[in-house]
Length: 269
Image (cartoon, rainbow, N blue to C red):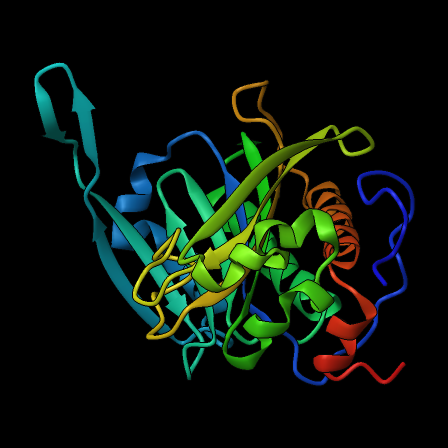
């Protein structure tokens, strides 16, 4: 049975280690007012050097945005993203003129992720010095495939399984739900998106590349409101908020799934 509690407030449940976790990607992003000098390789060199022992591969990438207006689609000015990657490409730090991000497809623990995030934020503070930050976001993406899709009604609480727990499930090609919840204790929001995604499709190619088979996703994104006032960059305070977001996301994950889900993914309890 799923846990019967409110996941949006109060202490998080005790973590249950999983031998085969369904987590496919974790992303933390800190946005700040634009720093145009980040476009220049000589400006970001000290930032790279601070992280190069862990992320030795630097790959610049040109990002081109499109703007849809009354006159049609227009290209905006291209910007350079600097991607610092670990050997094996399981971890990536991305530095752009208005954000820094840490993402991984090889998540092992909350402490490991937050420790790496601390190193990134300290390098940002020392070598880029944005002074202010506009937004913090933390996102966890789970994905189920194969035989697990047949058993979704027993793996998910009824509010989450929805139509997939009905006789219409065998004829359902796609079923997606999205909710945005207030997090009163964090002064933030949590976007929860879940559902069945067809083969060859995705709701976000950057976080979930299309698969050759259908999949079920649970995409949980906690974030501070954009545009409600910038605040000073404080590494310790930002890490504390990221930890609170991670705990709240885990609370939501445990609310959404059943004990059978945990057992099927290698829970020892």
